[in-house]
Length: 117
Image 1 (cartoon, rainbow, N blue to C red):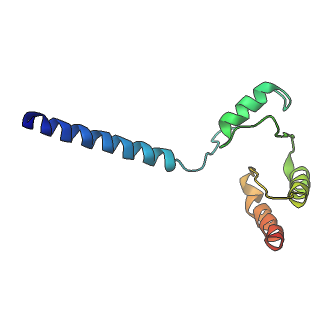
Image 2 (image 1 turned 30 degrees about the vertical axis):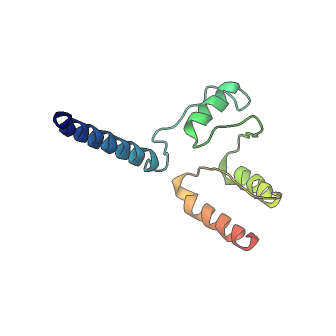
Image 3 (image 1 turned 60 degrees about the vertical axis):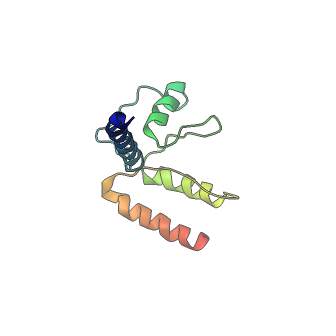
């Protein structure tokens, strides 16, 4: 039995190290970012769109979810703010914005949301 003790110790250490590394990779992945433009080959009502977006988002697109194609601030923010205003219990949303106007847009949203909370 003593002959096998070093082997068991090394094996247990290797398994524990692998577990810690996998846990760190899973929890520390950070935010997903798109490095290149994603070309759409289907519309928002196509089932392929839901599958594609589910793989890009941090959560799947579910059957009860609504998907709308909105572009630029003039189209995006009014419906988003209206959905937030009409929420009865809580809000959860995910959105992307491009760099040139991202900070201003989110500052505006945060300043509007602040008094609502």
